[in-house]
Image (cartoon, rainbow, N blue to C red; front, side, top):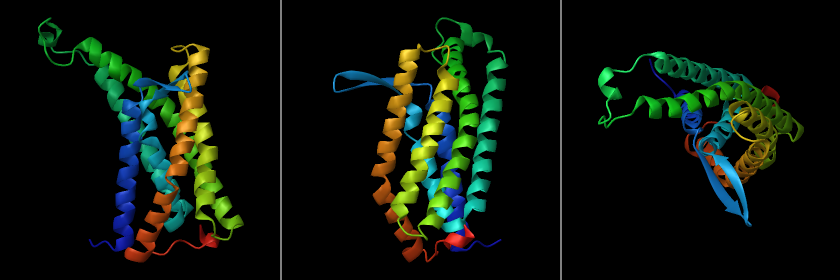
Length: 229
């Protein structure tokens, strides 16, 4: 089997996309608190890799069209569901007796359960939020591309992220932390996460243009025409 430049890039983008999605789910249970202008805000560390998934979705939309972007969305969803099932299964399996000893230096049942038990909630919430947000992101991106006749890459990339990340943030944080966090902290988590995602999306605008130039001029892969996306 041989792969041309377009096929190799597609596989690479798909692999990074799935890795960013799954690792974001696994580390999302860690919360940090940052202070901005004297006001504390709570952030989930899943905020680090997740914006990359929307950047990659935009690149896939741009060079492969909505069908390819939707295919990768379903591949990512399948990977997230598989990860959720494996974590749920592992949590139910009994621990080796020697790991229950007080002098055991590895991962204890309590520590493992706390980390991956919380992570399981994130995984389930992410599966729901992910599908909603990704398809909204794809739809808005394609709509803006058609309306602007393929111009203003920054507008469709940032605009689609602005809408989709709002849905993603509200759904995933509400499902993952409802009942665990008081309403004030939950609202703070949603607001802080959304602001950070938007900030990152705007900051990534030069990267989008750089990737676009790299793919089109170096790899010689043309973007999909607006009417074909």
